[in-house]
Amino acid sequence: MSLSQKILNGDLTAASRLMTDIDEEIDSAIKELKELYPKTGKAWIIGITGSSGVGKSTLVNKMVEAFRSGSKTVGVIAVDPTSPFSGGAILGDRVRMQSHSTDEGVFIRSLATRGHLGGISRSTHDIIKVMDAMGKDSIFVETVGVGQDEVDIVNAADTTIVVLVPGLGDSIQAMKAGVLEIGDIFVINKCEREGADRLEQELSFMLQTGDNRSDDWTIPIYRTEALKGVGINKLMLGIHRHQEMLNRKGLRQQREKERVKIEFLEILRSSLMNKLLQKLSQNGNLDRMLETIAKRERDPYTVVEEIIQNILP
Amino acid sequence: MSLSQKILNGDLTAASRLMTDIDEEIDSAIKELKELYPKTGKAWIIGITGSSGVGKSTLVNKMVEAFRSGSKTVGVIAVDPTSPFSGGAILGDRVRMQSHSTDEGVFIRSLATRGHLGGISRSTHDIIKVMDAMGKDSIFVETVGVGQDEVDIVNAADTTIVVLVPGLGDSIQAMKAGVLEIGDIFVINKCEREGADRLEQELSFMLQTGDNRSDDWTIPIYRTEALKGVGINKLMLGIHRHQEMLNRKGLRQQREKERVKIEFLEILRSSLMNKLLQKLSQNGNLDRMLETIAKRERDPYTVVEEIIQNILP
Image (tube, rainbow over all chains, first blue to last red; front, side):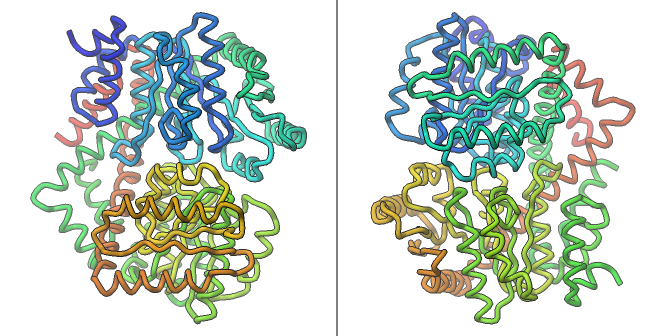
């Protein structure tokens, strides 16, 4: 039986194995992904983003609990290098998360790798596909939301949650850089801290003035104290309301289309560059080209134009 | 006279103009960059990276002062969305930086845009080229060093400085994600804060155990209190020592080669995708493709293979 068939039969080991193959860019992974593709498109994808230290993982942990108590199956993908899920942070968090590790309805996967050819974005999309085909009802994708890749990932979610905490001076500033526009729901975590009121006011003001959404959705701000589980139920209701709104207005389909486009371009970009570099590297051609450019005998813009002219006349 | 000729004659307005054209991806910018290219390759590129809030901009500010007092000309490029240079942060910093704004030997440019087709990485490289052609002796490139694009940028520097502060719990964790490997020089800024000793010990331990550099460079750790100018002279000496080491061992040339390769691939990737998307979009072809993929009638992996087979048989 192929890996993908095993995965469709509920084999968790096979799923882990395929995700590792995706991470390591093993060619056969593509074959499996092709087979899984018709079974995808059902999971609700929830992007969760915010600076490191705002408590994203604790929050995800509590939301997973809430989904599980409603018998929903959940996938979690951590693309945040500082996330406990990806093994980057303090032991306490990791232990805390282990409460789910014996629960078959929860599948957790971290993306530790960065910098391989396809980019973090492509492997994330591929791993979402696997979890989607596994039949997970909801899939959380956790990122720090700074790099463009990460914004792309979260941008492709059905519901995007932006997490802030009081007292991180740069939180509002960071949002200016694009995160503000992508949030469907905002969470002020660690809301017991001083400055929560002021942060909510500032945020609320920015959301009102910057609001030119076409979907009539009023972006809610929730306050949570994730460690103690405070505010999680309201947040879950918020996610549910957003989900209903998208479904009611037929906007889910629109988001799915945008996601398909982002994924497609990602696959095209990485596959094309791999293939082209393979071709260019033959007989040391690429090295010679780079040599003449490094010596300033030629410029990279003209060399690129010639290559493209050759393959896309 | 062309923009590039004006730039080579020292016209600062022309330089700003070209940088704006690069930011906005105006086609004619490529023509100017081609003309400038032979005049590049001389500037010493200093990457400076670290989480937001560690004081990178203040540090750069002080280093610029130091370079200027030695009559060196300097360029500063801020690709950090939370940087005061890119207008993202508190007014105080911006005012502080204005001390250089009337100094013709300093050219400051921020990259506010994110997410346009070429990526932040390509425009940064192009803007470095302009400053290099302008004859700047040193060019600082400031990033938060989280996204892959940003790691690429800093990775392509001659000297890379990683800035940390005591008391940001995740600083060591963040480094695990790749920043540790790219630093030539480490700075513990705000070293008057509690925890500076412990951070230095941890860092020193990690640098010793993780050290498998081929260049025999012992990575130094400097302590600074940038706001007060404390420790800047020693840091400047450190940069100078690193520069001397690279020159002495012929490694500067090697870094230049790596940089040329990264830039070349970046230009190739973005130009190729632009051209290909233009072609694919003709007659609504791309939309139809995406439609069938969204409906799960076809999978994106096979569609991409067919496209590539077509142009790179």
